Image (cartoon, rainbow, N blue to C red; front, side, top):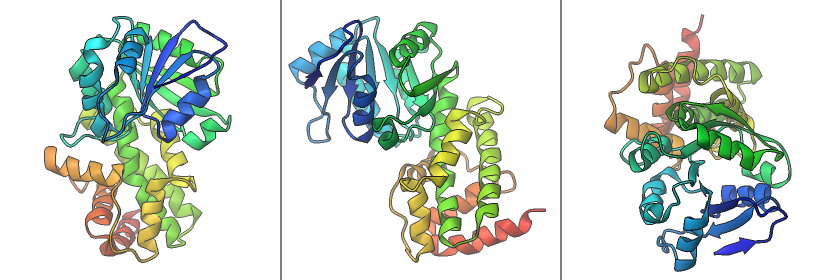
Length: 306
């Protein structure tokens, strides 16, 4: 555990996971709160006595771990949580059963408990260097919204409240499905016009999928959806954009990422969305399962427009 000095001693915060986003959260908060960090790793999944003490004292616990690790971490911490603590996740993927971070938090902590999710353009490197980030704070608990807003007030991470955390989580999941297609188009040199059309079509399908999964209309039009989609699709540091670039440059295998994992889990645990309503989703599936055919499928999709 690392405990950092702070100018403000009014709030205790525990960061779980110390990868890129964990470092970014430390950079945002280290001068503002009493901050503890659990360097959780796959080979050391159990908290030390010092961490468990920090859990009991923490008013906010920020989970900076992948979605597949959220349930394991919660199981280790749950019995030690303070009743006033808010558990916050930044994960943007699915676990192997098809659950988002919001699904897992709700199942483990309860619908009305103090928890939330963050989704939006929050590139860790930019947050660490003092640039702005933007996120929707998804929580059905008013006290959680207020407490997390207080935590990040006067930082360069700007939050917008959203009372539907499942929609926020699904936005982060789905945008990673479509971004590799934009990387493919860019890698093939097909131009800015097509990139814009791909983003437009991806947003349309994301909204349809969110209605299907969450019952919410136009839920992808904010920071967690559109803004994060554009950021991830155009950032040079984007892993998911790079997946498409690699295929464009001749790779016959797409490396594992949250988007490809999402497609695999969706096909396994949910009915496959119909081709006529989600044509670009099916092109994305081709990119994952038959990368060498993705260019042809993308050309065929373009020819259907107009």
